[in-house]
Length: 156
Image 1: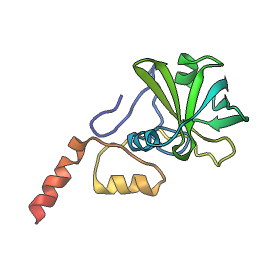
Image 2: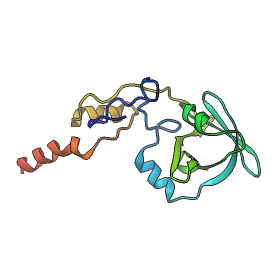
Image 3: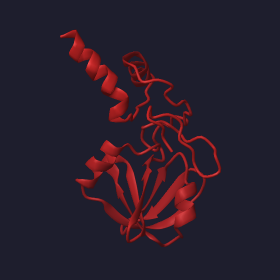
Image 4: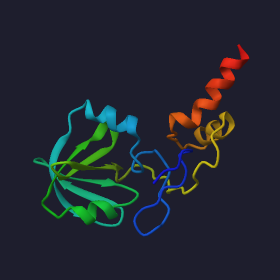
């Protein structure tokens, strides 16, 4: 769950959630939107372990790395249909008619960045630029940015 600053989210069981919007980590809402505009490739779930998801496509088995497979392992079973949008690194699993799980994936052989558990403590231009400079991404609510819009309006 996120707070208004885009702060700490927690998985079931209370452990902190990764806050990286990088390949194989958290799926950003813009990434999900862009992926929805592209063709997903359908396959069958072959295997899922702690960090790797194997999918059987018609022509081959392809392995993807992800930071956490707990939800995918919870909802899915080997042989279930999944789809992948490789250009945007999104694996999609339809839990039921009304719920879809999106999992960030990257090529299993691509360089890996370990998860980060550093929620934004405040939303300021400095903290956001530091986050971008460290290779991380962020998602904050519009309400958290309104003070900056008001300040910019006062300066003109």
